[in-house]
Image (cartoon, rainbow, N blue to C red; front, side, top):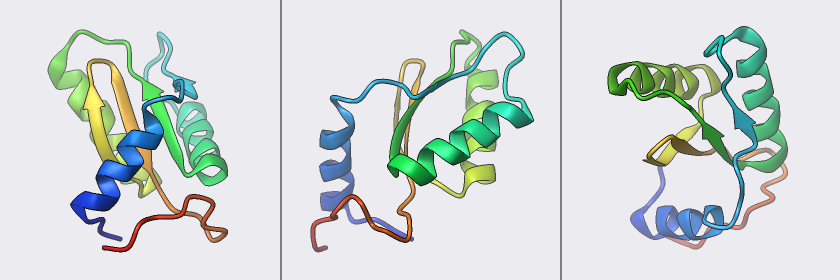
Length: 98
């Protein structure tokens, strides 16, 4: 699924007010954390994940792994926060037309 710039901006606006649903702990990205992210994104469609590491390379690798494993679309990353979107079958979030 590809999103137009208008749709991405709409989703970023919706994401502005939500809090991170999943936060990685000291163990980093584990199978349990991935399962939690996957479950949250199926339920909410639009989530924030907090990745508390100061190592930019490690953070990029973790973000890439989350995106690859969940099949979600990365909307943006600001600091330690990754914003993801994956539309479910119910289509809870109405996207604007292209």
